[in-house]
Length: 266
Image: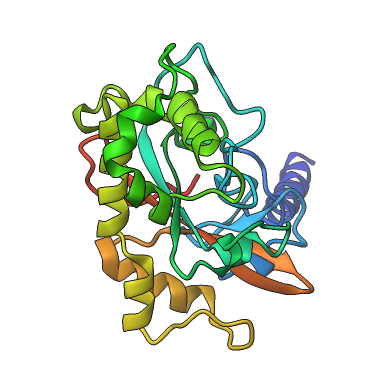
């Protein structure tokens, strides 16, 4: 009888393991995958992580286009200033304007523009981030020497000073432990320098990938092209419109010494 119970228990256990493999449980690997489409119909899963398994943790993503917006609306931990790495986030304006009306010439921009440089966390804390870490306000006069560069490579669809102020007070003040980011001018200047070193358009053009509403490219093709920038595959963010995915944002992961690192699966 004991042997029968043992076999039955093993059968039930194997069935449970098999069933669990088809769902995403927080802190555990989900089913194997090769693309996000493999995960969308699996319970609790939201995407295919870099390790080849579905996960319940979404990519860190800001608002639909470069404008004030945190990683997640409820992720701010103002009492906890700790973070693990910096997210260097650039966006493609034309994709951002698919989901909203963009005034002026913003929708005509043909460069990847800065969204932000954000102190970020990994693992179970990936959905949280430090914010507004001190009382320093944004002063446009302190960045007047680089304003032309900011206007060109860090524009907003709705008010540049408001956008820059948001990025500085909410995110920049939390990176003061990095010497090259310790004050307002240093933060914006260093971030622009990092953007130049991570020239997305140049890498895509070298791989014969050109922005188009008609010609499509796989995430693997784009990821491979962008890996040539720093040796690591960045995170890709897309917008869905009329059944099509449009590349919207690219995030590179950088450590506190401002060196490129592999983006954590979380």
